[in-house]
Length: 54
View 1 (cartoon, rainbow, N blue to C red):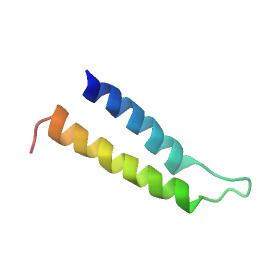
View 2 (cartoon, one colour; view 1 turned 180 degrees about the vertical axis):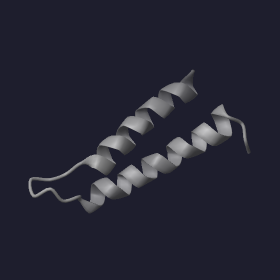
View 3 (cartoon, one colour; view 1 turned 60 degrees about the horizontal axis):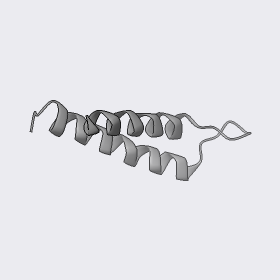
View 4 (spheres, rainbow, N blue to C red; view 1 turned 60 degrees about the vertical axis):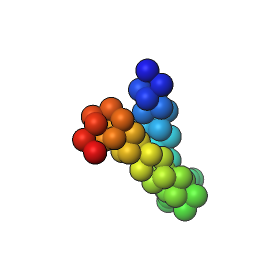
């Protein structure tokens, strides 16, 4: 159950951070960095803990 909650939270963080735009329509480096990190954690938990592929 904790893994599913973690997946939902990291998916939301990754989506928000990677699609965030400022007033000029540009990405912020900080948002992209933390979005990529959240996406890596999401993929790791999905593949290793949920799907048990590795």
